[in-house]
Image 1 (cartoon, rainbow, N blue to C red):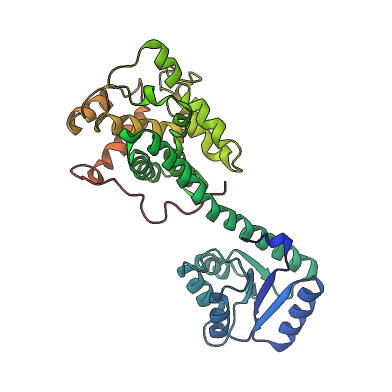
Image 2 (tube, rainbow, N blue to C red):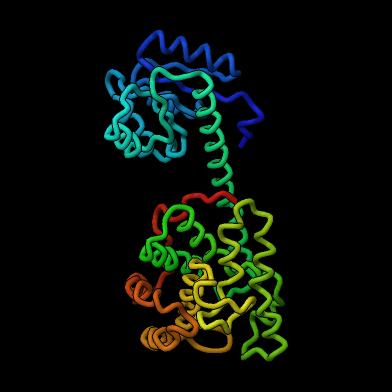
Length: 339
């Protein structure tokens, strides 16, 4: 996608007052923006859905569909869900502000507005749109890396997707949200990306690893962190990749962190990773029955696993129990995360 800084950006102005439309057009064109004008909510909604605007200045009090309804419909449409919307309003009560936030507005500007503030809000909105475009591109990067791991280690087919689903459930149960929630999903997808740097002979060995081989295998979290580091927002999920084999009692690797020193996302992914490994076949052993794996989770609570995560984890197991297909990431969980 073309960088919004490198080309003239287009602002859609939806305003029923002719004098305000003329003023906004003049201010925006002087600031080197292309301007599209709409006089009511229906026209504004139609123009926004054509994909020609980079941001919308939206009056609240419009004839026909009001600005709140237009904003809500834009947020309900996948094609415009990330389109930045700045609401122009003479209404300044807390109730009006809450209604606008509920409708999905990104920002507000009270009338009468000052030109420098208007332009600053628009620049901020365009930075948001550019970030969202980068987030969309990130999906391809994550998918390619996750697929590369599974292609090299065929015994873990769909393992990363299953983990992303289970980790998402657990993260929601412990009330993570926003970028923290998305980071857990991405961390789960990429937790084993470091295995790209591990010998296939070790990954597929049909028996227990010797001590030398274990030393090599235990390098994969650090290798994974190094692979993720060039990605812009790796700071959000690279700690999950590096620390998902740490243990609550401090005997894990690579840094022997213990208890709350281990990032919450890594504790979540570490638990679901261990459980998934137990209930699926590996080259060196057959899968455990789910009941036995649950018993192992209880046994290792406070040693390998954060005891505070056991109940949220067990509460989400119904989605997996008895299923013969990989648990899928729920809709919305893979909303883009900037990388």
